[in-house]
Image 1: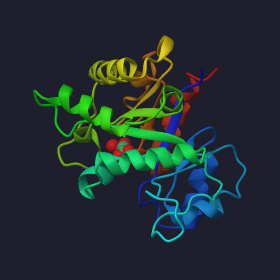
Image 2 (image 1 turned 45 degrees about the vertical axis):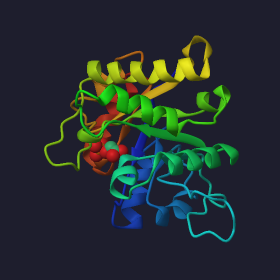
Image 3 (image 1 turned 90 degrees about the vertical axis):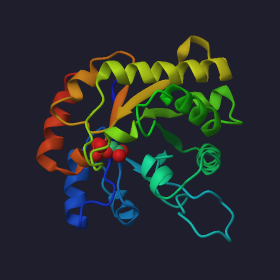
Image 4 (image 1 turned 180 degrees about the vertical axis):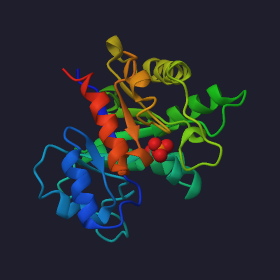
Length: 239
Ligand code: PGA
């Protein structure tokens, strides 16, 4: 299976022209641009795949929120830590969004990760996983791209540093154990990615691990030169 690369552009770039350039070079990448660019980018058929950075919590017409249905989007990030921690999005809201994405046949990119690697982090991960995926069937969990993103490793956080592939794998094992025992998933069919300060200097090490099916790249995905380097390394892993 090819490695999965997700680009979370966050609130960049500043112009549509730059967005189009970045999108054209992102062949085979799931690109999650700011909402304002999605419609224009969907007209470019260059091999990049469109995702969104968030989804509404409700699909009732009377609610204020994102309306992804009319856009040519196949993936959506759900439960990103910037939403969970900076906007106070609870596990319950994340769970509603996850169910809504599945109901509308969008592939959820579900972010899971602890705020700090303290003594309780394993319990924290367990609780977050249990409530994020509550009420789903095993088939629905298998449709998700489960992205381990330790909050402390995200590049915009002061003093952040990437996790190591080995310790990311340890956390992924915890998440996998919880999901497997709750949902009785046969032959561990779940797909795990890593996110948090992925750059051209470390992407090879993460992708080299069989248990890590891909990476979610934030800051480095809107730097044309750096992302070009990342894509060159990624190509070594593609079949
Ligand atoms: P980063 O962002 O790669 O800039 O750390 C990842 C993310 O927040 O999704």
